[in-house]
Length: 71
Image (cartoon, rainbow, N blue to C red; front, side, top):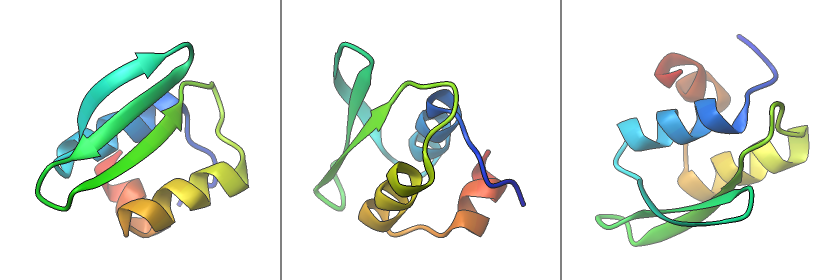
């Protein structure tokens, strides 16, 4: 189990569970899931900070292990 993920890896993992890219502003990608009606913002950095990653996981209701399986 890895502890660090890039923004690109997180975006690809979220696409696999039904999130689509809504729009992009600068280095931040806004994603939306129509079935759950939830939105999340993912910064396109080489390495996401721990707090940012955990906030994204909490918002999308997936665990770190599930993210590892999706990546």
